[in-house]
Length: 249
Image (cartoon, rainbow, N blue to C red):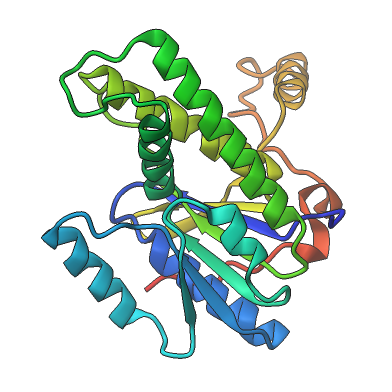
């Protein structure tokens, strides 16, 4: 297992430009390392609209990229890719939906018959998704090549009105947190603009220390303005192993 996993998370809202950013990032990483690109696709063509979306995505990708269909067993798919290939997995939120469906089938839980979903069933489904997430993290950590995963921020809108909707929102949030925690870099894409989240992130201890130091320096009295942003040494943010941002289409 690598001391510093070459795992990158790209997240954002719907149509934020996250996939375009991830594709550009992957292309540049592959060119720099003289590696091939493998696209791990997680969507399933369950209806005509999704089939069209999948076809369009496929047409837009470079012909040189290899595509692996992995709607459910993404960890196994990662292990089957050449070690030095740069992987783009798009997307985690679709993968989580497929995981929930697979586990519901295995446990004979009906996810389509009304709004009722017992709490114990929700807990069981969430636990199984967590296990699958750990397998995905482990598979990425074992690779010497870069693995870039795209996911969605699904919890920034209104609270879903159904138990299944709330379960999905909560599970995706936990999966995103776990992936981000294991990742070397996390990029949040908003309106086509990517922000390096880990470069700005801080722990509660660091935030408290900064706020207290700001207060003791006379903030509000001497007109010091807002507390300074977190600034960590480059080694704490992944150092030279962190990928460059690239750009967005």
